[in-house]
Length: 512
Image (cartoon, rainbow, N blue to C red; front, side, top):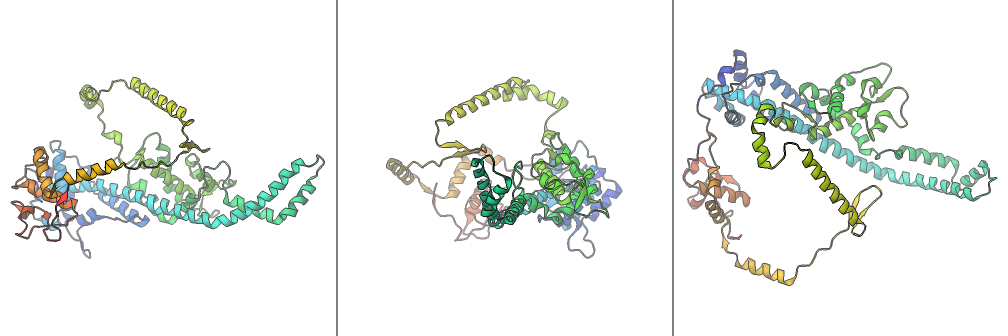
């Protein structure tokens, strides 16, 4: 990779302290095997609680250098910064040391600013992966296993209760003078009272209340994994600055208050509970209520700590995925609306943009038209459901569509396919790629060097065709070493990565 040439106006923005910090990034600390820059560039990659804590420590370390807060010259184009950062993220420390001071410091500054964003992105990626695979996924699987284990007990207890209720329903047909003890005698004759009490306790403990949205089984399994996330949940909002819109603002506030709540200690209460005054009850919704407040609800103004923390974390993760909670310093997890043109910049291009898109300045009329079209579509679908036996809607509002039997291919179609296939010429895939490249010369103009100039290689189309063919045929890459394969390496192949030529990987003539 060639280092970008030209002036380096970034270097003059670096004070003496920042320059010393940047130069130290290229040094290998005593007892270590890699430089600090290499440690910053790699970082943790495993989705686990301790690894997220290490990643957050790295975010705090890079942010603590305040290199990202240096104001750069407005004359430095963003493309220039991107080129310097890409080079710094891949170049070896020894290679960077060989450059003049101005080049070296400019590259390190652009790299450090890119790493500050990259480490935040990586940390939130690890959080997302941990929530989806390690916590939510495993909790769901464990909950399914528990359902299988509990099913025999629940089935047996339900059968006893069903027998008792059946006797009770039959008592409606008895005379009006029937007494309670007589009903109990009939029930005891079918199910002993001790077994009935045991069945009620079993069903109450295993079955959620009627107003519950679901059994909350996987949520209970998540709450049991408190040790997995207790470390990073205290640091997440303290290290990374988050913002939220109206939908996620309350959950973000609850997440930011978790460190203070988890620091609570009392000699009168166990550590697994929190006082009601330290939490936000409004963020506890749905099945989480049973786990946080207890079933039946506790009367001592205490809540389950583990369940509340996971309730807040699960909602924080959901709002983060929707960007209702976002990190301004991140690249992937930032607010999408922040990239929209506003103020004078929008007013300068508004007319041309609206004209090109064919949109009115006032969206009210357009939205009303779309709403009307959507309403008509819903009414048409509803009218057709009555006569369509292949579509049914159950009591829960879920749509079920009957399987559609595939239409058999007629013999004429099979014969046509065979005849067309026989007429197709047999050519090498690489030759087809080269021919297609000749149809569209502008495609080759898109390949430029990192410095922004045009390609310096002869027969670049041959090299590009070789790379595309190798990727399509799953051929490994390497430098061309054989004279027997001249067509894979154009002039200047010493600086070009081309597919390795070998008799076993030479593409055979293929139908296209």
